[in-house]
Image (cartoon, rainbow, N blue to C red; front, side, top):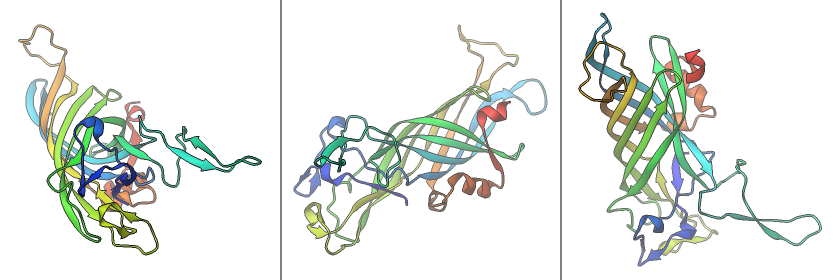
Length: 278
C-alpha cells in the first residue's frame, strides 16, 4: 500500500482545521512499517573529472538511474506507545513498546532511503544502504481542508536528504526537492468509530506517498587529474551538480519482494556497494 496514515487521535481539530504553530506542535505521521515506499529515481547533471578518452580533466555529463526504497523506524522518537497485555495470573496491564519488532501495524516514520543505482556497464544494480532523510513534510493550502468521505485533494511536499557513501568512491551528495501528494478521505464504513469533524462512521484520512523533483550538489568521486587549485586547501574531490526526480512506483511498492521486483525491472542482480568494491 502507498499511504501514510495520519495519527488522527493526536490531531488537534479547531473548527475543522489542524492547528500547528511550530515544528514542535506538528503531529508525526503514523506509518505501517510493512508498507514500503519505492520511487523511480533519476538524476542528471555535470561533473568535472577524467575524460573518457584521454588523461585530462574535463566537464562531462553525469547520469544516475535506479530506485529509492524507504527505511521505516518503529516507535517515533519522543512519543510513548502502550499496549494492553493479559499476563498469565495477573490483571490486564499496560506496557511500553520498546522493541523494534515488526508488528501487524506499528507506529512508524520514514528515516531514510536505500539507494539502488543501475550500472549499465557492469550490468548490476548497486545498493547503497541507509541514506538519511533530514526533512520530509507535507503541507499546503489544502492540508487543513475538511474532506467528505470518498473525496480527495492535492497537497505539497518538501524533502532534504543526503547520499553519502565511500565503499566504491567518495560520494557526498545533498538533494533538495519539492513535489505533491494526494490527501484523501476513505468512504464510510458502517459500525466503526467516526473520524474527525466529519462524524462519519469509519472514515480514514490518508496521505499518499509524495513524488518530488529538485536539485543536487556535492562530491562525486576523487579528482586526481592535472589541475591548478585556486583554493588554499583543495581536497581533491570531483564536484557534481544537477537535477533529480523521484516518482512513486506503486507496482514496486506493492511487490511481495521489493528487491526481486527491482532486479526484474532492470534485468540485473543487486549487489551491495561494499561487495561490488571488492
